Length: 187
Image (tube, rainbow, N blue to C red):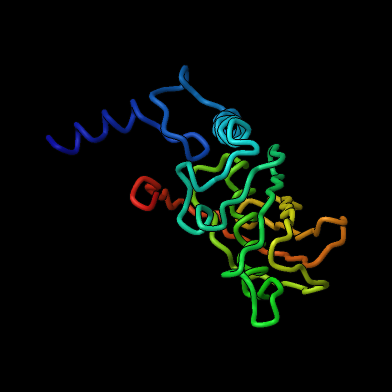
């Protein structure tokens, strides 16, 4: 009896490109769903432009950085961050570890604009330290998606000082997962 019930349910509910649909009439284009999610995040980020991110629902580290979104579109985000004393090394310049973390954070924000249902997880990251910035100065962090594969996304990021000079660059490969993070538990 149970087998018959499951078979009937199976006939009624099908998966199309990883998306659950009721029947052929209700087929949903996966790209349309991804585009809707992407537009939702882009609109959210756009509404937060120039506002301190510490005041909004964001991951704890993003709140601590307290950046301001300057520009956002699918696969590209630019954030402005004021350099504070707790971000510096003993010489009073932005710590290399902080540079790496800021690059990683802007890449993370950029991946959210892609609209994937699953969380993207960094596989690797490479950083080049090219310059310096002092406490009290403001930098721009710019992230851009360079390639979207079926399972791997490649992203680039750079930190730019007030004069437009690149002070650090980063590249990262990220794994597209099916893991759906419940953000309300961390923000």
